[in-house]
Image 1: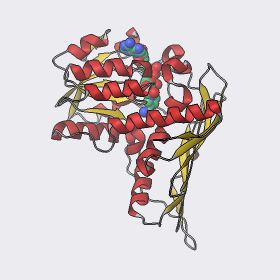
Image 2: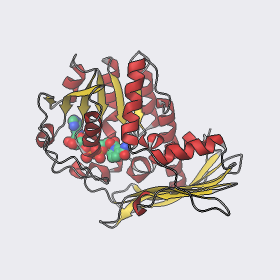
Image 3: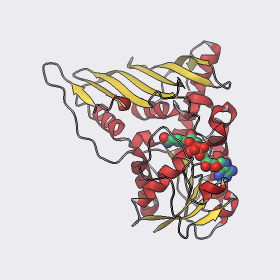
Length: 341
Ligand SMILES: NC(=O)c1ccc[n+]([C@@H]2O[C@H](COP(=O)([O-])OP(=O)(O)OC[C@H]3O[C@@H](n4cnc5c(N)ncnc54)[C@H](O)[C@@H]3O)[C@@H](O)[C@H]2O)c1
């Protein structure tokens, strides 16, 4: 049984808590830290988010140990694994401290706000403890399916791919930390990094990136349209924005054109992923019921149980996603393409 200490019981911390409740034969939350007294006590009625939680808003935390200071949770000998779900600007410090204390660490995305911080986290993970950044999209059924189809060549080579992520301004975050770019990195790091990481997973590093966008709220980039250049000439476009009016539904999706088929999916439409092949009826491949949050946590628990390093996503790849997102930001701010090494 892996004993988990959860730090941060906001939108994503509550979600991770729900996943552990489905995995009671493998993991158990034994400690929970949040700076907010209500959340620490299991009152999650003021927790917001862009995906619904059907689990209810008040939880009986039973004998889960409440901590006000994450340092005390990290020092708790009864905690084997620390799950970090606090605002992004805290990821580096808590990850490094937890790894140095010998705990396994699952840290939310984006890994950190700067590449140097990511490197510090990677350096702290040289011991036997496992470390993974929670890149849920690599585990999300539709994206897992697309990766399989690209790798297998079932529909011939990929010619073009459009990755999308859309939202209204995420004002639900406690104290609105997400609207401060020095805390969240703005939409490029907070929202768009999901697709940046997925594009790296699918196609590797590009030769260069070019991006356009603008800053409208709080100084961060709220909207980005990027294209990445590859020697193979595959066309890759990525777009993300969070400056839509309140009530605009959260959307993630993609359109892929292969030599022999095209694929389209948008989660906000409620229409399942469809495959279009010339001369045939559109096909709807069956998807697993569990989402990427469940998948990422299962993979991390597997790695701890089998004493192997995470392989579906590595900390070095999460660092590269931060670097690529920052390269796009540089392109937005300079109006010029940025070479990638
Ligand atoms: N994978 C995803 O799809 C996804 C979705 C949302 C957020 N995230 C990431 O998860 C992280 C948290 O985002 P969120 O939306 O859950 O934010 P949130 O504001 O809803 O929750 C953050 C929680 O951390 C607590 N906290 C803040 N400082 C603390 C401290 N020093 N010690 C203890 N607790 C502290 C807050 O009280 C709050 O309850 C961010 O890095 C964000 O980018 C990932």
